[in-house]
Length: 274
Image (cartoon, rainbow, N blue to C red; front, side):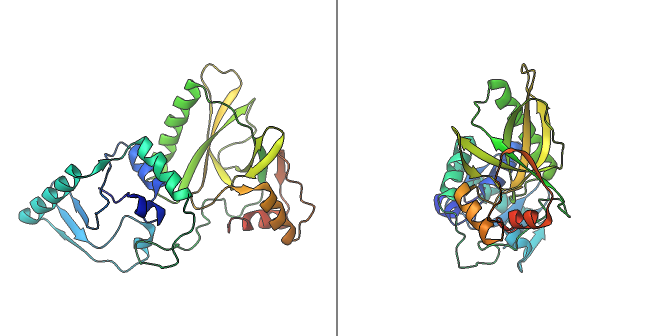
């Protein structure tokens, strides 16, 4: 049970990425817009307290009671079952809509409620440390075949399962025609194109998996991981910020260019506070 109502999603109190991670692992999810309780029931134990399943709660002062008292355990189970009956099932369409609501409200509320809202300290662990190189590549609009879609779902679920239901990471798939020159752990910035125009720049992402698409001799699907808080930027804004960082002549090319210059790496990371 989770409060995945529109207000909770828009306030960044509930993460669509966390919902997706649990959903991909086969967990049944139900949303209740009135939910405020934090309880957990197993076959033998009940947990009742203030802690949310969030990174913010890990950094807040929380209190919980763990008990094996049968009457409390039965009460907790009855409460959960009652909430499920009045709740709404969460599926792929629900999560897709939740992402749209979250993306339309990109700013975390200024009011910081411990354990609920507010921005945790920036987490840079998504990238290798030290970061000595990254690559600029193009991402052209390519229609996924049915085989590519199935492969994408399978690989995404595997990667999410390995990392656990952690809301700080997002994933996306990139189709590459030809032998992929990258390996797991490489860092890419994809420049999205529309026609002949480079229009937007994805945040730095780490290669998690490379797999050959069935019935496609030279097409590979690359699964990339990025910080879910990092947004795609317009090419115009990227060039303007790089100019302010002392790189007015930076060439934002999408031909596999390898970036190793420390000043350029620092400026590119600075676009997303990495």
